[in-house]
Image 1 (cartoon, rainbow, N blue to C red):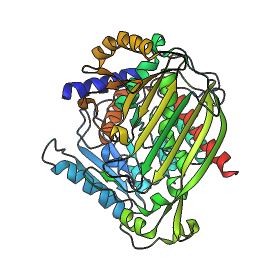
Image 2 (tube, rainbow, N blue to C red):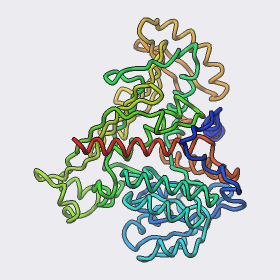
Image 3 (cartoon, rainbow, N blue to C red):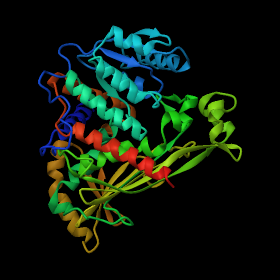
Length: 471
């Protein structure tokens, strides 16, 4: 089983380094493409900065070769720091595959200044309140520290401008910035990317329309859920879009990221010329006081949320949709938040990429028992048998890369049957992303397309927010 999981990680990492074209003159230079060596040499020493989100701990769910077990934590005093340290202790104390992290904590109101002054590490992990995240990123790279940041790295147009400055500073200082795009490691997405790269099976991209896009990606998330075996306690600011960011700039970053990663692998996307924003909108999810208590453990809404209370409930602007074109492909990404999932369910993902011969689709609903499943469906005018014939020709190649894959015909479509060993889960993907980033640090550079892609992504999401707010 461990061998199969390793294959997934290796193939996902290899897929990130495909052929590339040169960035356009208007695109910033690629991360790490500087006169002096970027990244780190020798041991990687982690700094955790203000870990307000549980994602900060998931980077440390397993031990990673070449990473020091000593981690310096800089944060304000409070429940978020205590929760983070409790998660790390749980990893250290679990019965199997226990970790051996040693957390050294510097807590107090001057935590950011101390981190910059002391620099007790070389990679800063940032996952928390998004109101200051771009500020933290800029401070870290100005101090000559590499950054591994949870999404989103920018939640407003002003944040995006600061992020551009941060990437420029990183280039000057010979350090790297990378955001944690876990969905690139999810096996159905990895295989969707593989299948659309087979012209005999997929054909050419359908260009689509605003009403019927060529690419659709949609996520449903939940405020209350189980993480690492325990109910997740949300900090109250998570419900404040002034601090967490609106849904249209948060989870959508994963979806926007996946579109070029799958459709234009290894190519640098210029956000100014390759991407055209068409329309965007936002909406709210009501959270009752009892639900808020269940999710946060707090009695009543804090004062900073009073601005969003209407009709007796907290109205969280966490839903959004962006319609845009990327190199002429009409694309739609959307996110919706509900309070808690149905029995046996969890967060869900839907994705379809349409070709002239076939559509490659990820579904994750009750029919799939809330597990993501991958299907290949005939395009209009193409028979199921023809699609099946080409798919069967492609399967031996896929099976060499991903042993154990099988194919089944069902309900007028082809189902790619994926061994459970590849389904390592969302939490494990954080370690996989970290391993890829640490390999880039050792190499001294990111793939040439990564920095242009990150800037294009956050340019789009923050522009979409500005457009949605005009309505």
